[in-house]
Each structure stands twice: as structure tokens, then as C-alpha cells.
Image (cartoon, rainbow, N blue to C red):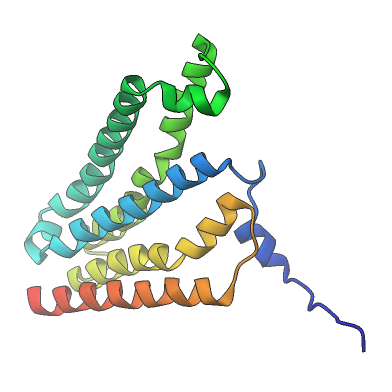
Length: 194
């Protein structure tokens, strides 16, 4: 009996394939690190929000500020590290780097850290909806937390996307476990804190 592969759903490629193809391993690791790091710090900012910080409009600013300042600190640290250990890139590129290569590496660092900032945008929007009373304060915090939890659950998808690999059920399961733990933390904080 021939081994038949099941057809791949159309949405699978959209979620798992990058337009520019897979990233180099160093860049994939850097991008994934920024994605995870940003989500963890934004989740912490969302968890620390209170009814009063949401009602006063401070919570969305704190979440956005967390994203922006973490991005700046991350890029600064990476650029400083690479400037002080240039041989790390020289070994990778087979010799001393040209000025254009150094600029390209700096641009890569800026680009690869963007997931830190993007992790803050939608949670801040949810908290802003609570501030403007479009949704109740508790709901705003739960939605903001759920957004970050969903992003944490998507780590396997992001990993495979930047690496150019197919998704594995075990990896998706690990992402869901991490998301459940994060969701429980957000739910407990919201219920206890309000």
C-alpha cells in the first residue's frame, strides 16, 4: 500500500512560511529570542496592571513603554556586544567586515528585535479600550493577557517559520502548555487583583 501524505491546509503555509524564506540560524535565534523576551516582559506589565491604572490610562502607556524601552535596551546591548567582540562576526563572515557589512549587521539587529515592540501593541490597544470604557476594566486586562498568552502559545509556529521547518505536534503541545501556565497566571492576578 503506497504511503500517502495528507494534504497540507492552505492556512498552514501562511502561518509557517516567511516571504523571504528561512532566516540564517543566528538571525532566527535572535528573532525568536526577541519574540519570547518581549512577550514575557509585556505579560508582566499586563499582569501588574490594576483597575485604577487602566481607568487612569496609565496601563496602556506602561505596556507600550515596556515594549519600547525593552527594544531600545535589547538593541543597544546587542550592538555594544558585537562592537566589543567583532571577531564573532568576522569568523562567521570569513574575515574583517566592511563598513557596509557592519551596517547590514546593525540593521539586522534592529529588525530582529522588532518582535519585542510588536508584543506590546495589541495588549495596549485592549487596555486602551478599557480606559475608554468600551469594555469593562477586568475584560480589558483579560483580553490583553490573552493576547500575550496566544503569542506565547505561537512560539512553535514562529520558530518553525523563521527556521523554514514544518510544524510538529509535540512542539505545538509545548506551546500550548506554556500558554496555559501563562493564562493561569494572568487569570489569577486579574481575579485576585480586582
